[in-house]
Length: 111
Image (cartoon, rainbow, N blue to C red):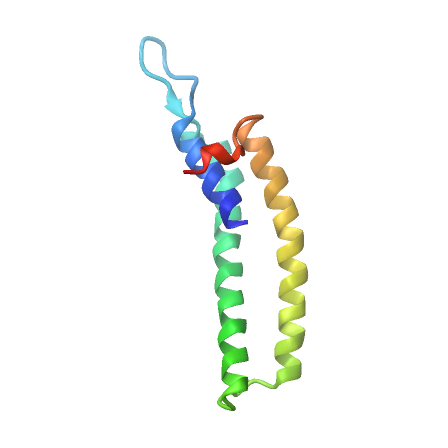
């Protein structure tokens, strides 16, 4: 999901379209519709990243016998996180593909 967001945001920053008459075109990321499409997904990507980091740290603490969270509770949280991240990944891929157009998610745009 991180690669999809990086690729789509870089592409939106470099792709220019529909500028004012007799002026250069604007990057598509400057348009509100593009921002309201991609930026909430970026925020969700960050949230899932930090939630996964939390789970990873708590698992390390459980192995070191320093955790304050019950392992069953952590297991339930990790399972819910996995299900949510999978559904969000599918949604993010589809929305980013639609927002960037046909060439937006090519791997050669990710550099």
